[in-house]
Structures are given as structure tokens and as C-alpha cells.
Length: 157
Length: 293
Image (cartoon, rainbow over all chains, first blue to last red; front, side):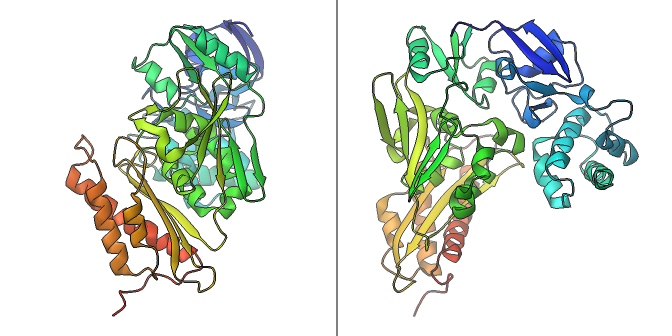
């Protein structure tokens, strides 16, 4: 197999083909090549979860995944969650005031969507464990956990 | 930098050999921070995630083979982790869900970070690392595989293809106990324990295996002299205290921005007692008692 310089990803339902340098993380490709800035950058080393992204529905920290590994795959960012209405998790964060500065919010929302797709009725402890990979430095976590529980009620309906 | 995604092991080895300085990338969870921080600057990345057959877990009788590309999350979903508390506990201690979704078992052992949670559990299982260098398949005892910080027995072009071990007896008990400064952070003291009681009398310890991480430049199996303290008797609190004290003197701890040496010793003492006690509870031996008179 030859050297790879160009990749194609299905980003939020739209196929995108573009060049990306080797070793560039998926997060930078999304933000810089595709101009989708909902996926945030912060810690750079996979600790904070601000860049959480779904690859084929699985949450990963996109600063730690080489962009080339998303070649041919479905990638979902926070921009891809709402259609005409907001996603129930987005509604939950609004209803429960699950944010202050909001920088970590896209990552939390992506993780929460993945959790509820996997387990629509999680316990408080299961929510805490699942969201361990996301850090918030201003809200604290109580309102965020409340938001996920709020969204879970919508999943139940 | 060049990026290759070979679709066979032999092609991957060739790509590694023909570059001046090439690095393998799999899940990316260790490689990407190193690249990002400029700690390494390879001229080629060889992405092995498209190589077939490295993402299987095969159980044949008591023999277990885990492909190098199996992610921690995939491994957690297997019956293996339902049956083996030791393995499950160690994997659940690794970072968080998204890291476990991408991180691979082969990548973890190849990276050889001394604070990784899984190697001590695998060392207690007498696991072997399987590798391929383009010509032959080699097997390395995991107790000897790690040479120093981030350094293993692997040659520069050698690829880890999997991990192999034998299931311990069903009446044994195991666990991994660790402490971390923050949820999802690196372990500051981690110890794995596997206790095998006598199958007939149900309480005499006939085999005991202990291994730790974050206590030395490499994940280490505890010396056989210390493990033997647990063997031949019913394990009581006095014996556990003796083992915990002996392990402390075995460690090569360093002061760093996280914790000082004395605090780390305290953590190892607590984690050792916790690991042996839990392993015992999970075995068919009776739980821990005070020292016999």
C-alpha cells in the first residue's frame, strides 16, 4: 500500500475529501481543514475531553486519534446532533443549566449522547463513570449529571 | 513525515525497516501526545490498524490469545473479563471510556509506560507477548519484556501481534488495586494479586502472584521470595502485613510533582493489603483472618 495523503470522511452525514498531513489529529483536521469548530481544543494530550467526537458512533478523544484512521468512516461532531430540533441532550443541558463558560459543553454532550445510545436509563453512578473522560473547570458536575438524567427521561418517552 | 497503512504484517515490517526512524501507531492514545509535545519526531508513521486478524480474542480450553489490536473496551465486553476479575479490574482502571475505546492492548505493552495498569495483571497471569519481525514469531515473558522506562525487548522493526496466557484455576481469586490523583489519571500506586488456594483443603495458599506498576522504572513481578511468604499457609493479616512491608522495601520510588516517596510507600502498603484481601475473598479460600495464635 502506498503512502496516504488524502482522506475521505462522512462528517455529520456529508462526505468530505481533503488532504491532511501525517500525524495530524482528527480534531485538527475537523477544525482546520473542514472549519467545524464545535469540537474544541484544550489540553492537547487526551485528558480533558473537549474534543470528544464519535467515530462510527463510538466516543473518542479526537486529539489522540490520527485523522487518517477516520478515513472511510462516519464522524459525528456536536454540529451533527440537531436537525430541526435540538438533540434531547442539548435540551437537557439548557433545561438544567449544565454549563457556565460552555467550552467543555460540546465534549460533554457528545459523551452523553454516546452513553444514552448505549444505555438509555443510566444510574447516577453510571453517568459519573461514563463522563470521567470529560473535565469541566467552572460548573462542577452536578448540573451536568442532572442534564444527562433530564435527557434520559426524553429517551424513555 | 509519511503515513502508511499496510494491510499485512510483512508489509508493515518492510515499511518500518526502510525508514530511518519509523514509529508504529495503533490506537494513538500514547503516540499522539508524544508527537504533539515534540518528544518524538519520526520520519514515518506505520499505522497497523488495517492489518487483519490482530483484533480477535481466542479462547481454546484454558489458553487465551488476545490480538494486539483488541481495544480495552472490546476486551471488557468479552466473557474473559466476566470470568477474570483480575483482568477486568485492571482494564477498568485504565483512564476513561473514550481512551479505552481507542487504546489497544498491544499498543499499551509496546509503549511500556511504567505506570500502566494492565501489565501487572498480565504479569500475574504469566502472560507472554507475541511479536513478529518479518521472519520469525517470538514469545517474550512479560516479566522480562520491559527493560527500562519506555524500553522493551522489541527490535525497532518488530511488531507486537498479541498476548497469550493460560487461564488460572477457577478456584483462584484475583484483583488489581490502584490509586490515582484524579479520576482517569495515571496510577500513583498499582498492584495486581492472584491467589490460588489448594483445591482439596480450600484454604492453604499453593500459589501467589503479585506485580506492581508505578513503583519502579518498569512494571514488575514481585520477587519470588516475597510471593513465597504467602504460600504454604492459610493467609492471615500478619502475613499480609509482612508482604506489604517487604514490597515497600523492594520499590524504586521517585519524588515528583505528584507525591513524595513516603506517601507513595503508604499508598503501596494500603493497595497491597487491599489487593491480597480482595483476591482472597474472590478465591474459594476463606476470607482474611487475624493471625493464628
